[in-house]
Image (cartoon, rainbow, N blue to C red; front, side, top):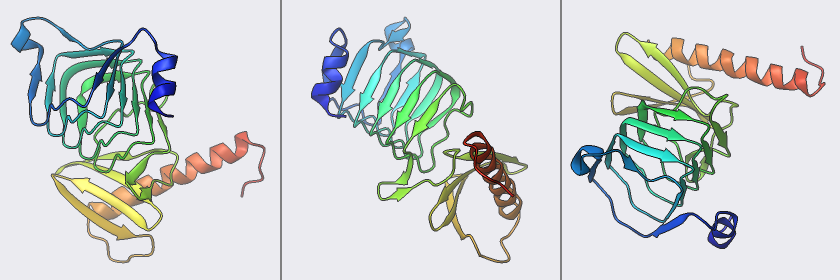
Length: 206
């Protein structure tokens, strides 16, 4: 989708282009009211490492925006779209995200919504040139040391934990705990998802 098509589809939306919000603290507390960016199209804006607090988004569209390392706290994101955005290591875990789509976005290290019935991921990529090959865009596994976020790529599993990243090939042996157990859980989940999809499509399954 290009910008002209997008603006034609939503002619009543406000348009914000090329703004720089990198590393800013974007909080409703600063303006002493709820910060509302609803019904707005943001194009090519830089939100990298920004901190959002009490932000309300409804019907908002982000097109080719950079959210790398951004943190969303106590935000309400509903009925919005992220298109061709960079969400690398962004964190939305402390916010409510519903009925929102992420299309053609880079999501390596992303801590996003876990209700995939309410939110959709279309053509997600771990990195710009690395696609994600499972039905789930990522799997979050809770451990005693903290959450692990797993991404399945063509070359193996990418695991993010405590600002660290670990890579394990599909045939790699002697993977240490807790990563081995997390990969086993994510692999079974991916297998069950693929099997369920094949059954829905009427394909023969083992």
